[in-house]
Image (cartoon, rainbow, N blue to C red; front, side, top):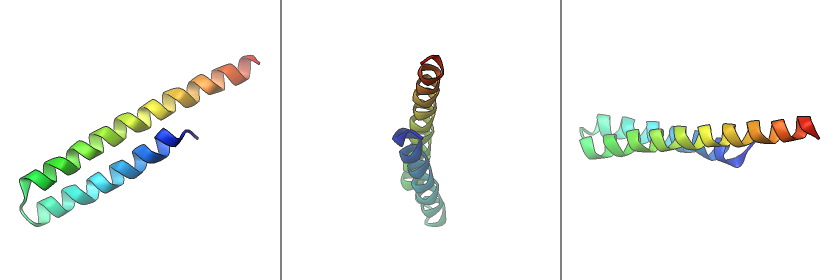
Length: 62
């Protein structure tokens, strides 16, 4: 599993927590930062999946 997939999942988790804190404290800026972290984590995880798929393709052809 590619490290980007793992790091992306972690970033999404932290983003969800940050969003929840922002919601609980009625802080829209913190809530938005959490949502942004979730989006960035999702993109990073997707990039890791693409890299894994590329490696699998190369390994299958070898």
